[in-house]
Length: 467
Image (tube, rainbow, N blue to C red; front, side, top):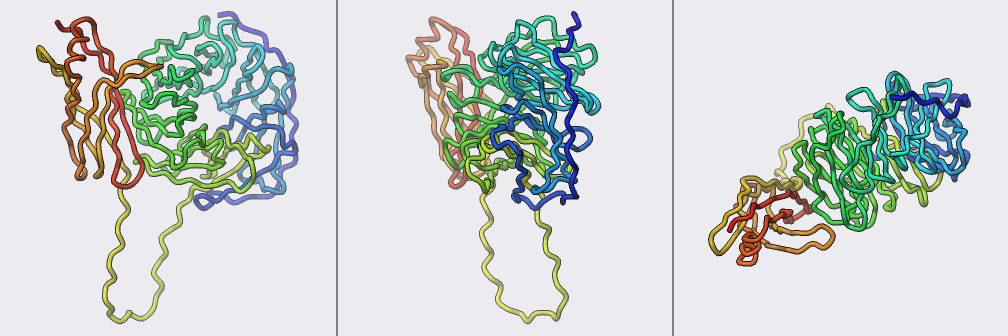
């Protein structure tokens, strides 16, 4: 591999450090820190190993740090590092690397990858085979991996030799966006897709092999960001569909609809409280989703914040960027402790009040025992859906990607938690099709609970031709 020379070197500009700030704020409590330039457009954000929060300023062309232990809204004490780059290049996403190094992408123009270790910034043009480097993560193999949003690629740079991967990995679908390392030590990449085509999640080995690709149940969903969750699965945002997705390492996808449509969830990250936190770019809220699918939203107090990316801080809070008005924010995750009983005389006996109804558990749906049954005249898909709550289970099998066509539909009432057998009848037409060629289907199973948020899961099926 050919070692490349750095393009630019620039020293950091350190600003004043302020007095101490509290840690682990109450859940949902928002604190904001304003940059001097309201048009700086903070975008990517991460936490460095020393506890400091770093973020990119897309328009101002800086990478900037803030110390959670000392920052206050009146004196944030930013450390700003200016990038000396052509006007067409802007820093986008950022991630911690080995030691206290930071690595970031510059998405426009020729595209660059850069690093900052506290003394100087180094930047390199990406190879000709990569366009618009976007998201970036430290891989389990020691390399720094990044997506090529503009030309459907994935690549890496060695943090020791500064050499790029000799050949970029060709990804199966357009606009690869977010990237994360899964609990299986694989790279997981979401593809935003294009015009309702190619909205996928891919599992990639560190040798560059695209091992599997899974499609979201919702068409034109626009997967944007992805993060490893505390439950051993990966969680991702669907910008166009206003949903949060969950995918197991074996590829089972479940979607959770947000309470409001059109809010464009973008960034997502695991929090210290065992939940996932996400931004609503057009909803101007920060959201929280538990691993069982319960969603809470927290509005931001100012106008047009456009929250973009989010990360967990060492202080026990979540930190996020506000692309629309030049701020970074902090939201608390600490749950209120149970109050201790106060000492006093024993109360007189009184009638026991009626117990308050317990909240409904979060809905979840999974699918198993999927089998294709064929007779001389008919074909159908049998399966067992496992529901966590009462509601209605609806199953649809579709073909096509851009223009979907329903092939069968099944529905069953779920009286409560349990397993329910479904039979999706492909009919005579389906059987006739199978006489001519194999059948590729997407089997989507939805649970519409009696109360709460609808969820769904899907899987790909390939039915062999049978005369």
